[in-house]
Image (cartoon, rainbow, N blue to C red; front, side, top):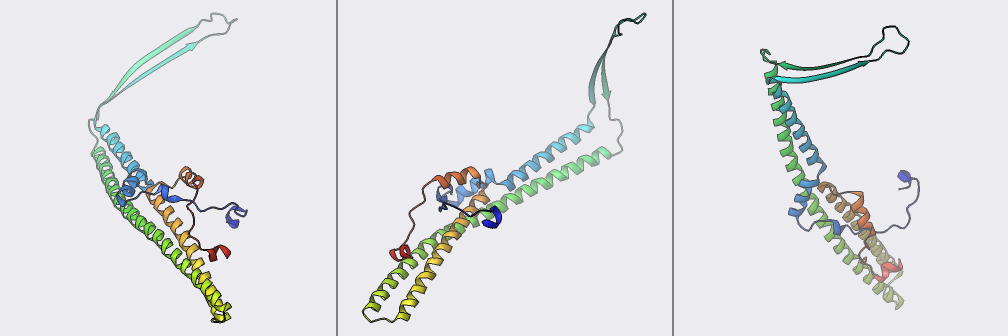
Length: 238
């Protein structure tokens, strides 16, 4: 953070991105079909190729062009025989493609081939986006479940640490047992924070695949109070 922005972060909070995520893969795919940048780019490319075919095919047809011009000449005062003049011209130009030697037909075929290629690219992009969205959705669901599982593991490690500490006070456990329990609790806490980080990354990846990763959406999620974290008394003490 310091390397990229030059300052240390302040007032960091864990955003609640669940409000931005759809509950099913069907809704995720539907959102991606509407907002995925890859699909929008492929659709725009296809529209451009269609317009190019229409423009090239117009070369087979007669072309009628209208022209109009007007000129106004004014001589300055003091010149002998000076007079003002004004001219106007209107014309029509008709062009008939009598013989083109196959060049125009070749251009049409090339434009049609480019349109077909753009159509195939769009279909392939749809399948790619569908696959990426479904994969990102399941990854996000798995990451969220892992947070719950690791939180329970951290809670169990905290209970074990408290029990070991109480037993050590009565002489039933050694200092080494307490240190081992503290290490297990620390490892569980690190795993919990890593799991929460992975869940946030998975949520952002899903939003990106759907084309919904926008600054306004993230600002809305950041302004929403985050859910209460799953902590244990031992974790709070640490």
